Length: 380
Image 1 (spheres, rainbow, N blue to C red):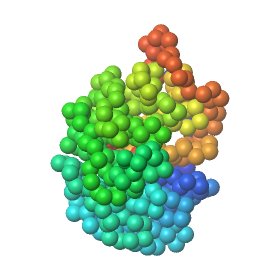
Image 2 (cartoon, rainbow, N blue to C red):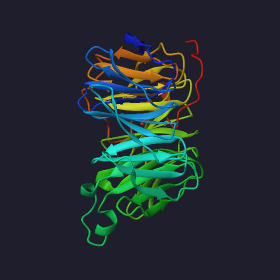
Image 3 (cartoon, one colour):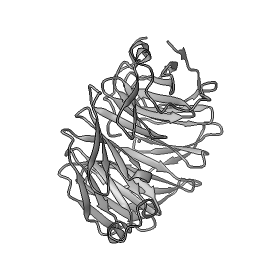
Image 4 (cartoon, helix red, strand yellow):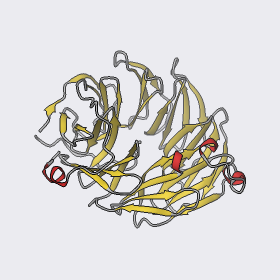
């Protein structure tokens, strides 16, 4: 079911697995972070490497690309900022005492999470952390930030949320909401019975969605800490989440993606066809793209659930993917960045807001934390 996608370009410059892939806001560049300790900048115009970012003393865990600067974090306990024109390292942020898992750049602030059980915030042009967030009992994984302008203008909350709120997830089974200005814990989100692997935030409704090794997704009010609903149909760890137009997509170790109505928790449909855990997903222009531990990427029509295309060529788990224009970019633990032609996939219809008929659900077989373990490519 579904045709095979054609590779436009294969970029094998890295000498180790690629852990993350970031697309610049203007769409002109890509950034990859690798097990080989380097990051590379790529042009989306021709798919060629335009800069090699060297300086980390261990593998790069995650990266974020802005229009004028690139940010990388590493198992060497540091974060680096780079000039995208020259590839020069502009700053090194030191303070964490273990592997830095994630970074998030927003509002001229740099947020980070680490195996040292802390999250930190830095002013982008300062090399010393301006605030530490301590309270998790195990490593801090993913991050989300709600800016002050996205929070209610309630005089009772003004002091607490004046600098925005940071949401963190942890292998201790909780997520926490932090007051950025004070560093104080605003709420602890308790309910999961396993590590919280992934997190997305809906700023407009002040709702966080978390996915866990307990096979559930949970929705939380970040202001009150109240658990709003539980999404229970997965049969394995929830590895990745994507929120699009009040629809929540969750990828799981049970080899499926499920689509839910974010406001009610009702399951809309299931996207099967994967032969291993779903490690990453991305919604783009009516198409749901997935990457899997089976080394394949897939494209599904988001409305009907039909598998449209399978992209084969990688030899290990796909850790991250991005879409720009008519090109799908996939980054894998095999160390290769692949570019694929996705023309003809865009769906003109909006995604559904109500469940599809049950008969179609039963008959369709269709952002390095939370990745499936690398596995060899399985024969088709």
